[in-house]
Length: 346
Figure 1 (cartoon, rainbow, N blue to C red):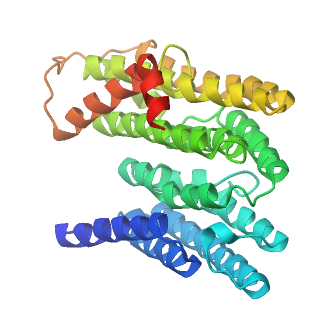
Figure 2 (tube, rainbow, N blue to C red):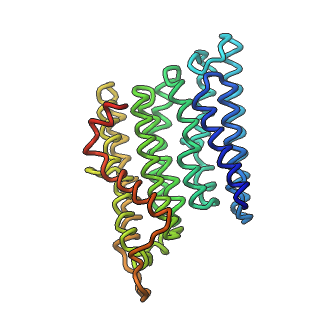
């Protein structure tokens, strides 16, 4: 793909995301979602591999159906209330349809089936965009409409997402599918709290984006698409592998790393809201995600292959991506001590 085309698609993604997150009118938000969908499709299918074409087709069908439901929900609400404002969603049927539409956009259970397959058919950089940037507009719409949505439906989808995201990631050998199920599990944590504390859900999303970007860029630097290839990368980039271990542990949510902060605050908030049972269930389901993140970290850094490749260790590898990896991993590991400042800002 030539640079001009990449620039156009990158600008379109920026425009679509900005349009959705800054609009008050449903039609403008829907337009931004459509621009995003059309801009990412060529990036998914650019390799011309049958799996990439299949992934682009699945992504287009699911996102088109979800966008149609968003439009239908807003039109139903406008028909009954005369309001096109996003924050004025009040009709019960519209709220239910919008919940389904945003769950499809995000990949929440039971509308999650497309996400691992699309991620598996994409490159790691496009997978990073699908896991982070493309989820920002739906999360923003969920944030704006959260007072109108039913907490019971969101809580049910959240617990199912944390459970299935954990269970289905256990026996995977492809790193992109493991990260897809990790994303579904993290979305469960965001969905369970957004009705009670929307700002906390956004904080969780920001930190998840930070750590997922660090993991995807690290894997892209070492070309780690399968667990078997991760076992031989320690001889090539030992320092990057050591950092990847810590970033994966942070993504899993182990203290004293960054990702422990939102999980701790979410469980605390759920207990304050007197839904301690849901807090207990999602805290137990967190162990599933912890297991496959630990497995990924174990394969990447601790397992030795039977035949070690004998060549020079590349300690000084100065690619532009690695500078970004260094910044992101540092933030992924070190933000917990300054959590009072983060909470004061949020």
